[in-house]
Image (cartoon, rainbow, N blue to C red; front, side):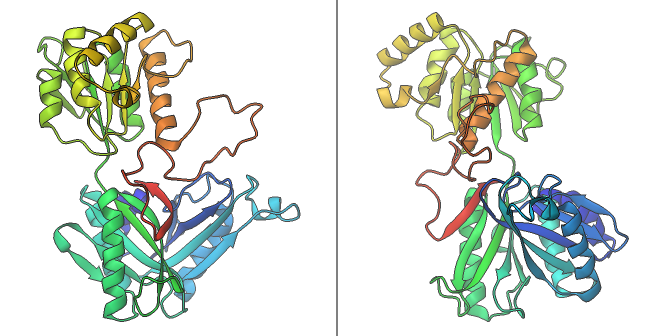
Amino acid sequence: MLDIAGQLSEWAAAGRDFAVATVVTVHGSAPRDPGAALAVDSEGTAVGSVSGGCVEAAVYDLCVTALEDGESVLQRFGYSDEDAFAAGLTCGGTLDVLVTPVRAGTPAHAVFAAALSAALRGEPAALARVARGPDRLLGRALFLGPDGVRAGGLGGGPELDRTAEAEAGALLETGRTGTVELSEDGSRCPGGLTLLVESKVPPPRMIVFGAIDFAAALVRAGRFLGYHVTVCDARPVFATGARFPEADEIVVDWPHRYLRETVTDARTVLCVLTHDAKFDVPLLEEALRLPVAYVGAMGSRRTHLDRERRLREAGLTDRELARLRSPIGLDLGARTPEETAVSIAAEIVAARRGGTGTPLTGTTDRIHRGPGTGATAPAGGPDPVTRDETAA
């Protein structure tokens, strides 16, 4: 739901009633991850999507009904030979969708407004809702924001709220959305309640080193994928806003020095396009020792072998060198800067989602892999009490 915070914030600020349908769990092949949402306001306007078009009409009707009767509902949309086209979910998967009415002047409206406002401002935000459990609790929500800000409650008592807050905080720290199984008394033993915890954190970083023509195309691709894109180059004549108008940030500094001082995390991707040993080697010495999601470096195979030799001489281990994607990108036969940017972006997506990069034609593997399987999964793996998690 937090991925459509812009439109929903406008509705909440205007005091407009709306209902929001959110994907809780996904089984099998399905086009959207947990947290994907479709919302309908009191005038019948719809925003968002829960299935890429498969079951939108049926979910829209559920939202209209929820607005009329004020009741939350959990609905499963599945696939079988008999009902595939009737239900609309022909891709072979199963979706559990929670529909929650949000009426102006109610406690739920205040909780949702707080979560949407925080997400829209780019602040860390987590919204926990009862997705399965007693009817009196279904859809009840608790918001957890920055600096301990909290609103709402799940209606099951202070112990349940404290446990839900702790679980939501754990997912928020890593920017993941997923479900948590709890007991109604607030214990962490599965039984009675399923919470859907949606989290929203600032976008992941893409840092592009080397202010060359290929970098300009990669900046556009990075922005399209939702990254906050920084371009870094030691040459002020090349690292300019005029050359990279779509970059979020332009830094004039020696790449290795900037990387050493800037903030990165397990979602950060580093693209080294400098193509010059005096920049590449000290930069990659830093990059390959950081717990980031992706490190790629441009260059021919001959350049890669020379770079690898220099890095070994600098003390990097086989394990550290194995993290380097070089030559950067997938083999698409790319030649232009734009084609090369697509190649690099495709490799980043494959690393993030656990893809192989092979054509889907002729393969029999699942098209939509389980969320959280890619290289951006936090170090140490997912929290043991959660499932169906996806990165923000």
